[in-house]
Image (cartoon, rainbow, N blue to C red):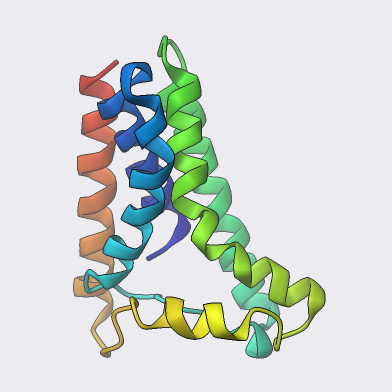
Length: 148
């Protein structure tokens, strides 16, 4: 999935568990990453070796959208810290991409191979592939707002 749905799902997990169950936020949000990568979606995996300018701009835009939405959802939320902890934990499994860009495509090869096993692998059209991610974002956002 894109970064934005992962961030919002992690924040929703943080909002749902709250400070009372803060020790569960990181493992549950981290595990959610793999669960949501398994759901059919478009744009599941970008190979670092084949990155072009368009891919980089898309990834940066996706991250900025997710962070921007999370900033807005954090406003006035008394438990904003737990939202951000959940959000960060939910995207940590994808940090191997950044490590590969910095240290080369062979870095963390075994982890990348294991991570890829969780990704939805079939081709799909744009409407179906994006709708699952948009629905995920809407449900996560509603959960955060309801727990405010």
